[in-house]
Image 1 (cartoon, rainbow, N blue to C red):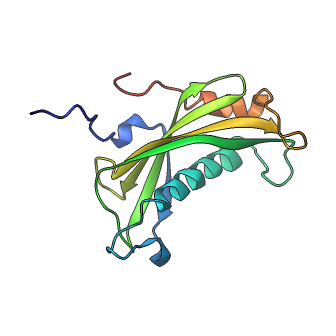
Image 2 (tube, rainbow, N blue to C red; image 1 turned 120 degrees about the horizontal axis):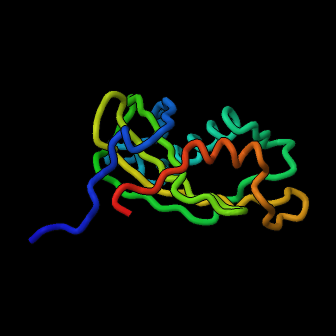
Length: 151
């Protein structure tokens, strides 16, 4: 019997990487990074990109991204004190939304220990209603735009 599960992605699948570190508090009773923590890694990688590459000021920008969908596949456990890297690509760029795909890698290792997706809808901070993605953010996201391998 063969599995229809897609294999984990590789670093080459992601045009942007950021180093992260596991923390002692990331661990669960089984001695590895707890599943919910991977979503924090996703969010942290995206925040690094938006703040550092796209000029987003999460405290003052009039347009911000709200998470509306996320998912994760787990391949290999991670543990403290592993150093990790998050790879980021944009699989879909709409007028007010963006689908990120993220790979979490143990530093220097292939393939991804986990991979997943995260969807932002960009909203007006005051009204919390969807608005077009501001041009500086759109331009930065467009640099990461590439379809998912195998799609």
